[in-house]
Image 1: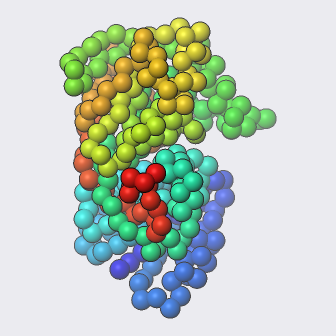
Image 2: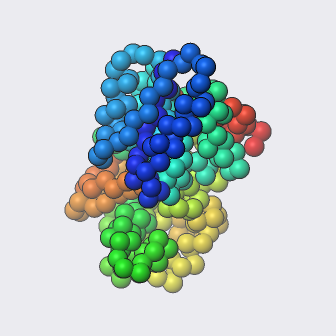
Image 3: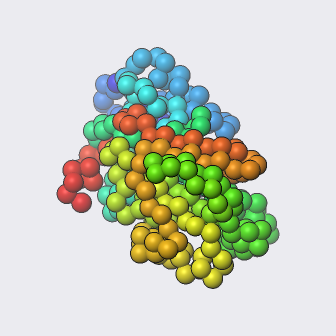
Length: 306
């Protein structure tokens, strides 16, 4: 078997290629399995590299060495490939997919646990021609999360302050957005604050709308936040972030389904595992067991014991 380590040299603000290479060489010393450490050079380079690996037909394990964006690129290349399994090896600043596993998420930082782990098929969300292993969303949260990068490079503006600026700017531009939503119960058209589609549990650096979403149960947890004013949004956001949105049915519709379609009057931005997708129509469909995930040795999350 071959082990492919895909390193994003910009993840976490530091190129850790040589650190990864040294750890991998030590792990595989004296073992028969082969390995390769590959450093990406451009956006979507990881997707192309993974697709090439899939096309080879060789049994392979692929480790995404970066953040959520790098993992999303690797997932997009590996969907539907029986010969390839993937996992994150978190090196970036954003690792929301790993947060889902609680304290066991630290096992994804343990190289030996990954190399000796098992493989489990999990679901993904197909969003137009993109794939999400975690969460897709549209509305004010997507605009805030995507546009925060417009402010983080400004002098004296750090990560949390940039996020606050993005929140203020998007709230001034308008909380709500007109959408046409087609789902399991029919079609509705109105203004909404946001729509969140969960295969995983965390996004946006710690928001946890779904406490119980499982990435292998064949179901998406969908949260539709109705039109709200600023005061209502402030009252709602804490419960939404803590997975208690169901306590506010006057504002929140919670659906469990395998598909949903969002249509907008003009092109808008969605976030797909933290990455921007610009479109006027988003068709989101669950693809059951479409991805082979490497589960670290010792993890009990999928055993139903946690």
